[in-house]
Image (cartoon, rainbow, N blue to C red; front, side, top):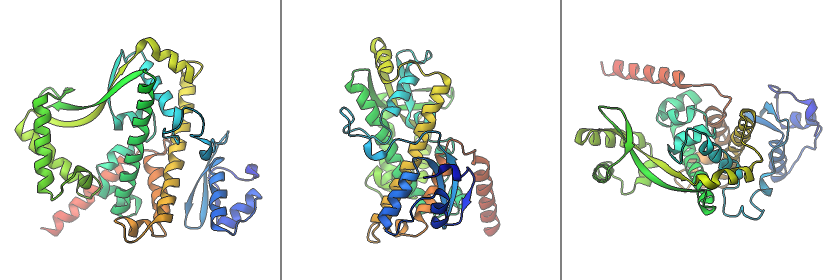
Length: 352
């Protein structure tokens, strides 16, 4: 594979042109071709637009082979796509001086802090309609992306936390935090407040015609549901909004020893950036790989099967990954806000 023949930003018109440039064999078999492109993704970051291949970045060092992860002792039952990198960066966060023994952090903030996602991820998850228009894809595809990636991230983060618990470096629990209306301060919810939140969530769930929170979370009604719940809670209490967070208690006596065991020295800024870059690239590739598997297994009899089976599914998911995951991608918040503002103006004109 002659990587010196390609450059970042280069556009190759099709698969044959890519093979010719890299001086590699043109695979006729579909599975062989997929395996070849998967191997290429270890050496460079590329995207597809129709038949074209766009070279985004050429790595200085190839990424580890995905199939070799998870086979060593101690890594079984771990989300090995992210492996020790997540543990390392969580420990790096915990040993920083400002965090004295205890950290409470939401999953979305933790994902941003260790740069598994870029800042667009959280905002756009609350503005699906605008994102779909900006990315020129269907809202159903955006919901599918968020449902699958959120599930993936939850599993990866909690597996890493459980690994640290197993080593008795930390204890953690999921807690409910609230933001007070008057003071705008964050604190743990009281037992009475948790009961109120539960009651409001249940009543709005029934109002929306759902029996389980998992059902509405994977639907187009999720934002409306959350907004309605917060509105009802706000009317009945002094709570502006609430969210779930991880409350992590650190074993300070042993954390640095475990940290040093994972990595020889405390992460200097340049090394911290390197590991965050590597983690972000791994997430990027993994989400696209998972989308390819969903596309291959798609059945039109399944809920999302109709959308996943479409020819443009991989291209649309790849576009969302670039916009929402790639740490080098700039903010699209203003563009989304502009689109939503224009949509509101159209609706107002339509209704006079």
